Length: 403
Length: 172
Image 1 (cartoon, rainbow over the protein chains, first blue to last red):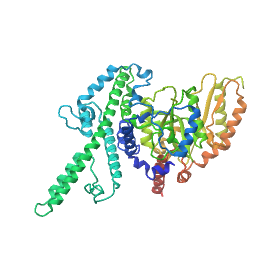
Image 2 (image 1 turned 180 degrees about the horizontal axis):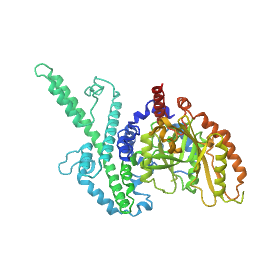
Image 3 (image 1 turned 120 degrees about the vertical axis):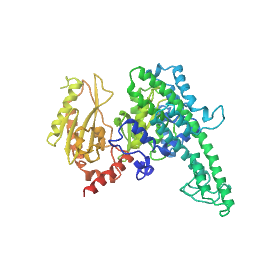
Image 4 (image 1 turned 90 degrees about the horizontal axis):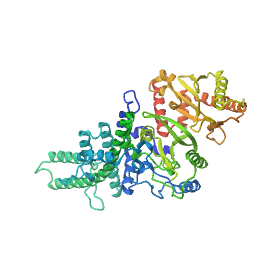
């Protein structure tokens, strides 16, 4: 049940400012929501890094007669992933394009990506000349200063990086069998003791340096223990090592984000040239939103738990047309005890969103399903709207494909 | 009436329902019937499906309650709200046994009188009473406190419940 997953104050937990007359612009929504995507994004981003999948558009490949069995399995087994998406990284942006992007050429995409590259460093943020590691935060700052990304996008990206690194920190602490709130002590592996809960391990170098500077400034030679100073420095150095590792992972995610940006900006250049400038901000927004939106059908049946990527094994092609496919999915969900409503309109700052299937249980909306048939594209505009619905309302849209 | 084209039958259905609910305080605006009371608005909206075409119209009926206290612009913005703004929202089919996602199809073979009778009855005896029961803030609070929130996610339920409860406490 969603209530259990979100708990009290879920809106605040999402970190998204309430809609007000002062922040109705799409840019403000992006900025606000970006600050609050928190662990949902981090978890998804982490998974993506682990398995290399594009979780923005989890593809379910199945025939209708196998979906029912799969749903049954999901109910029995929970949301344990049984297979990975058939999508390839970045495929949601590059492949399966409709006419809207058919005129994009590899050349103009490459040109935009090439334009971004000098400011962003090379792969994984390593400067080829110096060999030094750019932090992901620095890369975003540089990209913004160079005008390669907007200030709004920079805010969202910074929030994503922070969320991801916090999640990595939490994962690390979990591996050490300590909670983020625990204090002091030495782990069984002999690692330096953890800082106080209010400190925790820092997730960026600036914070570590500031902490060490404060510590050193308070150290009184000849009065305080030199061992204590040494121990503290070991702790800070250990934290630095952790941050370097987290930065590498965050940089890998950032590489993908910037690639998406390159494609999106190329797309937008096309839109603008075609006189469709209204989509510009939306397009930029989805550069961030796209990888973090979709979940799979299995989660519909288990909403409220942290979503795992779930996909149905691909069997053969589905012969049903789009509406029939949608209705069939709706029917299957209905048969599993969910209330379904097809063709539901939602309001977003980016315009109305037409949800193929809205799923409810016990008088409460669980989320929506976007059904895609025959390679139909999960468009940037849909992604932007879905991202907003999730960030603002906790309304998750899953993409379900027939293949 | 079976000789009418689907659009004419559809218009007749909406008009008949508007007439049915007039005495209950509902007024028609486009494809919606609206009733304002207690600073809130009840909405009965006819929605055509994307499946509709020249030969057939497929439609459903949405029910909604918009709470004026929860609107950004306050109650003054009630005149402009639609079903997408509703704080309680569900399909009329949810009031039926088995809670189907009820859609009707009008084609040249449709018995218009039978259809009008079916829908008018549903609107009068199921939809309108349901909306009336939720057309005040106390009922909304009670509904959301029960854990139910038709048309809303858990996030929205908690947000609106908090805001409406706070507003009521401030007023008292």
